[in-house]
Image 1 (cartoon, rainbow, N blue to C red):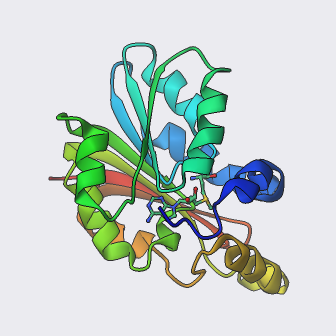
Image 2: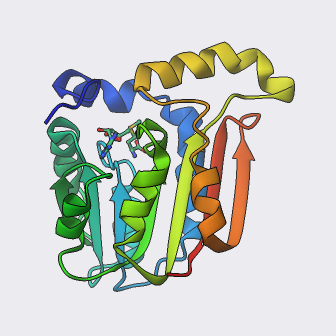
Length: 209
Ligand SMILES: C[S@@+](CC[C@H](N)C(=O)[O-])C[C@H]1O[C@@H](n2cnc3c(N)ncnc32)[C@H](O)[C@@H]1O
């Protein structure tokens, strides 16, 4: 499967070069806001090297399930190695494209998810709309949805816009995609956060089904 930027070299360097000191704030806001409960099933779309996985597995506990979906085998390979260091939950990794309904059906394995999280992945879809609609089909009614993504920093942080654009370009993300705007109209009880001058955006709400 063609994965462009997210091949073996990127996968090896991703955790060092991904700007985690800046971007971790998105995970720290979104994951608790999902309100995961023990025994729930959560889908991490575009899970990459698995930076969300420990926290998600912790929250759903040993009776829950975390499924990481990514189209890059190399990124999933790194995520798999992270699994060996975390023992407090069940994890399944699925190689597939978020826009491909068959990959999502395989990820769900016959049972709808209680929650879904996209961190810095939906802005890589050529069009976030079809990706969101494909994912929606494997959520139960009342599932919680978290979208963490990027935009151009503004106000006092506008000076950092060229840096932010370079980071997005390197990662293959469209900084102007604003994918939360595609998801948000389908959610209720939405909460939103903006950090680093609006560069990191977080939106969490409930999918009505
Ligand atoms: C910037 S990384 C983010 C990884 C991880 N979510 C994180 O927060 O660190 C984007 C990830 O999305 C994956 N990705 C991009 N487009 C995808 C698609 N259409 N379907 C599945 N995964 C995709 C890439 O392979 C990559 O691992």
